[in-house]
Image (cartoon, rainbow, N blue to C red; front, side, top):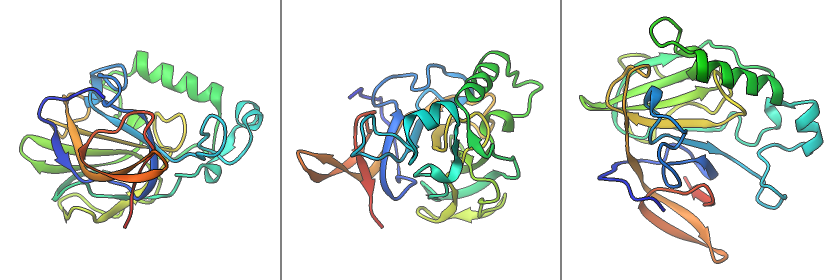
Length: 230
């Protein structure tokens, strides 16, 4: 596991079992870039641990490759998202429509376009972030929860939230290959210009040697089977 310098400790924003295919526990920058505050960002999905390749969808591979997958066939779509810290909501952007199903070719084209042609000076950040919430933890730390399900956001700008409070649902809005939660800490509320901040999760469990083991102040890798129970 890669060690981060003085990570900020926050609560894990999900419940149940998860995998982080993109995580600073494996590489930095975790998403291959420092832009949009993503240097230490996490992506979280749910998978079938018993199927080869740990797919995140219920259909077969050929169906995924050639026909696409309806969003409700993804394990994590619609799963609850919780506030990772106490704070004040500074952005709660909803209403950005999700594509009804994933499509490998179209999603790759969309990702390429956003990676190479997105201009934060003139383009709407929702084309990348989709529906998102930003919580002000303090004057130097902001938490962003991104790609949320359309119509799922439960909070409003100016609202105070408590750690562990339900705030939205996992979705597939914006620049998203498949339903997932993108989570990051930043030094500014402006995703377009913010710098990413390192963070670790105050506690969760990891499945190792056929048993669940508690982790405190941990940073999961992209191979870890992790969970947090209610």
